[in-house]
Length: 194
Image (cartoon, one colour):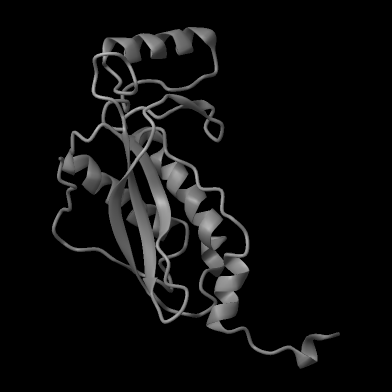
């Protein structure tokens, strides 16, 4: 066995091991699929939660920002549904692309303005809300996106608080909390509209 001469892994080794590949981050098409998208993204970024951190304890912080996106409805292959619709105006609509009738209803909802996407005469989903997580550590301090949601920027603070709470819940349920807590400001956070 070669293990006799092997050195103990360092903090930097842990980061190199987990970030040597480009993670396949998925955007959540709407609030219904948020928990699944967060779980997938955490697993892509950090591996399985139960073995997370190798005994290292970090404090993590959530960061929220918005980025510009092209207002377009696209196929989200991970969930086999439409992506690019505003998360605030699509949570009561079936975005699944599994059958022709469902796709027709989705197009009607977009054209009528019920779903904000890229329909004529409506507020397009031209930005994405991005929630990233970053550790407070001496090495490997990089903000990593765990939530990406298209938005028309109507700025519902309750939904934004629900997004933060969902990340916290998935962080605990998937086993990341044991060694590495998230620090969240106690006051509700909202992103101001332009």
